[in-house]
Amino acid sequence: MDIVAACRAFVSVSDRGSFTVGAAAAGMQQSVASRRIAALEAHLGEALFDRSTRRPQLTPFGRGVLGAARQVTAAAGELEAQARRSRASVLRIAVPEDCASTAVGAFIAASRGSGVAVETMSGDPDARADAFGSGAVQAAVLSGPREEARWRVRLGVASAHAEPRPFFFGSIRPRRSDTAAPTRLLYEAEDDIPAIRDPLTALRDAHALLPHQLGRAGSLPSTIADVLAGDLLLSTEARAAELGLSWSPLAELDLERGYGLASDEPDLIGRLGSRAERALARALGEDRP
Image 1 (cartoon, rainbow, N blue to C red):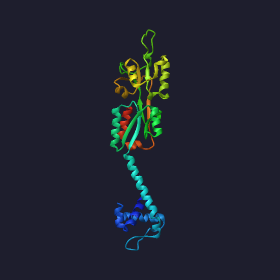
Image 2 (image 1 turned 90 degrees about the vertical axis):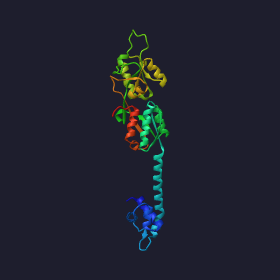
Image 3 (image 1 turned 180 degrees about the vertical axis):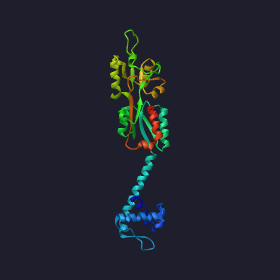
């Protein structure tokens, strides 16, 4: 039994002294209101109305429970109103700082198409986790193991000069005859996690590269300057394109970022809709269809 609908019918008929008028005021047919009130009576175990008179009169039992029925309908109304306000309010989501602005804009537009107003804040992995933990955002794209990820983004090497062909670590091993500083492979905060950093370190050592040939990138302008001067940047293909750099896949490693969406709302992705999810995946750099 739908006890909320039954209470609405009961309260409306009681207030108007008529099954016909009360049902219309509650937005239902008279037969529906009668069935719901009868079901409520069966559920509570007593008659709510004396139907022997021309106009329905409350029984003593009906008068005793009318106040509680009003509370039920009022609480249900407030719940529905709060749901409408929540749907209309702005949803703040933390996204990686290397997402292209145009791609994030496409995600926001797709979310609006599903009736969800979205604002984004960008930050590195720690900043996103902190923002979600503190309640500054209601959802956050967080890094995680790729085996458990909702989205996976392939990593390669971005450069200013190299041809877009598979990258081998041995290609940057210093030679004794070299006079220039050895080429470095830099990684940004997004990839400064053991699942990515450790395999890179092992491959660096396997190819006898110098320790400083693999390291954390600095600010974005400084990193771009380093890459223009000959260094390399661990990057998604989308990130390389945004920065105007060429991109090469890794020949010796299959590295992927893993992303999931942390939210207090269990089915937030469902509310955003499939079009918005695809747009978010593209903003993250996922290249799968």
